[in-house]
Every structure is written in C-alpha cells, then in structure tokens.
Length: 507
Image (cartoon, rainbow, N blue to C red):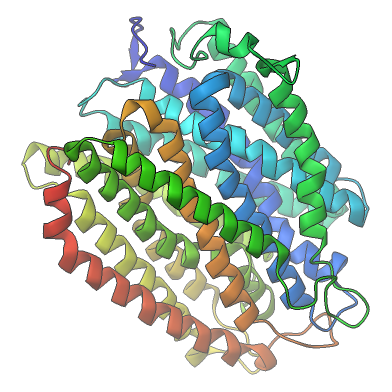
C-alpha cells in the first residue's frame, strides 16, 4: 500500500521515516546486543565442558542465524496476504521481547527456547519494517536511496551502542544482565512504532489487505487470531531443532553427523526456488527481467554476508584469543562495524547524491562489485596481522579497526542500496515476499558462516585457549576468505554491463 496522506517532511524525507528509524534502532539494539554475547556465551558457558566447544557453538550460531533470516520469507508472505505490515511488526516485536527476557534465565532449556522466540519474532518484524520504509515513497522518488541509508544508520546506532552496553553488563554483573538489557531495547522499539501510529504519521500505509481477510476463519478461528497463536506454538519447535545440536558426552550430537536444521533449511530453499520459478513464469517480460536482477543481487549479498557475519563468531573469538584488547573486551568489538557505518553513512549517502546530480552515480551492479572487493581487502588486512604479533600471539588492535573500516565501506556500497532496489525491482503484489527473499540471502550466508567457523574451530581441553596456539589457524583462514571475496568482486564488476541492461530504468 502507498501512503497517500500528506505529512510535513523532516530533513527532506517523510515524517514517518524517523519513527521507523527509532523503532528499528531499538530493535537492532536488542538483536546486536544479544549477538555480541551469543558465541562467547556458548563457548564459555553452554558448551564449556567440551573440547569441541568451538564446533558446537558454530553449529548453533549458524543454525540460529539461518533460521532467523529464513523466517523472514514466511513473515513477509503472511504480511502481504493476511496481517499487513503493522500487525506483523507488533507480533514480531512481542515475540522477540519475550525471547530476550527468557534468555536472561540461567538455564540451557531457556537458552534454546529464547532463540526459538527470537527466530519466529524476527520473521515477522524484520522484512516488514524495511518494506514499510519503501511504502513511504512514491515510485521513482529519487530520495528513496538516501532514505534507506538514513534508516540503515538507525540500525547501526543500535548495533553500535548495544555491544558496548550489553558487553559491559555481561562482563561486570553476568551474562544474563546483558541479555536482559537487550529485551528492554526491543520494548522501546515497539513503543516508538506505536507512537508513530497514534500520531498517524503513516497515513494508510501498512494496514491489512482487507478486514475480511483478517476475519476469515481458518480451522474455526479468525486468521488474525490464529496466526499469532501458531507463531507462539512454532517457537518451542524451533527451540527443539536448535537444541538437537547440543553435544552429548562424547562430543557428538543427538543426530550424529546429520545436521537437522540444515536438512530442513535445504527443503525450505527448494520450496522457495519452486515458488520463485512460478513467480517468474507468471510475470510479464519486463517484470521477469527485473525480478531476475533482484534474485541475482540477493545472491551477491549471500556471498558478502557469508563473510561479514563471521564478525559475530570467528572474528569475535579471534578478538578474544589473538587481539591485544586495551579499550574494550571481545564482545564489545562487535560495535566497531556499526560505529564505522554511523561515521560513513551520511558522507557516502551525500556522495551518491552528488554523483547522481553530475550523472556519474554508478549503477547498482558496480556498487555490489566494489563492495565485495572492499570485503576482500578487509580480510586481507586480518590475514597479515600475524606479522606484528607479540610473543603471546596477540596482534595490535589497529588491524581489527582497519578491517572493520574497510568492511563497513563494502557494506554501505551494497546493503542499503540493495535494500532499496528490491522494492524498485519487485512487482507491488509481492514486494514484502521479495524483501523476505532479500533476507533469505543472509540465511544462506549463515550456512557459509557455519562452514567457515567449523573449519577455523580450535579443539582444546583448555577453555582459555589462545595466543600462538590459535594465531596461524585464524590468519590462514582469513587469507583464503580474502581471495574468494576479491575474486567474486572482480566477477561482478565484469558482469555489470549485462546486469544493468536487465534493470531497465531502475538505477
């Protein structure tokens, strides 16, 4: 739906953008605050008795991340056809709040239930608030790219502050205080969103397709009531799937070498591909070309996020074991990426605006290729950090700073621009679903994260393993990642002339 009411602009953008900005800021505060602690908590608490603790933590982290983003496809589809954006965002926010508060309970069972609640809640919240931003702008509005970049800065303010505060609380008072603060952040996000609705800054945007659809009975219950019930029921089922990774005494899992979530995830992927094939078949020729590009840029993002999301797992462990940390602890280093996004977001947004005025703004495929090149350079910096390691195997903190600086430039070249282009390239009837496909790229990226994390896992009976024992494992792994990312970036740049033809008038 499009917001047809007229509201005063703020800084040249619709007023509603800034309510969504603060709602997403606090939601991301909760998400990234928890993520900063997650791998360290599993390694040092949940799986501390295992010599294979790194592998176990990598399996759960990758499975959780995959399900978090795969759930957005389902949440986007339900929003498109039944609930609408507003109801979906509220349902998702409530589930995620509960998840973060349950995570504050000192129990292995509560840990997995909390992850289940966050997975389901994120599916309803994440794709729909991003789609809501797109609905504030008319088709062809040149402000949309910069609007999404501003929105993206809100994400990263939350992502910057959360690891610092939640990491400090966890280190000072205990893990569960850090997790509890993340839950309060989510509630604040919902409060901002509700305030925007009360002030009617969104006009008619985000309402259900029709009240008749909401009231339509399914299994004797109106769909508007049944869906929230099913969402709560699904949370413990997701928890059981994640708990199937918890290693038993000999270090194996209940399912042996079989990865239950991976099997289910692959099945979901097949269903999505079949549905996408149907969507492409039913589309007009012009729509089909643009949809193909939307799918293609989602694939490019899979590659980028597969390397980027190592920041919450392998890079956090590298920081804990092999970086000379003076100003912050390993959990708090998760704030560096968002810090650089905040610093760079407006300058890069202004750069795109200036290049657009002078008709030199690169088309989206070129930005994506450059983004992958920057990602490759960032991991190359980490790969050479061992050259300046001290006698304890600790490298200077400056290498981590430069790495996140370069990775953040790559992210700004790709993610906010791609987020905007998904709404431009997708037919209005399936735009929330395609936003779900966009986030599905992150779900598959976590499969990459899981694979790399297991390859770089350190087996040791010493819970405080680190130093010279782990340095070469990490630096050699980072060198391989750099090579793959640089190669992918060059390939995308060479393919850009063909891709931009398919995009038509979409820049």
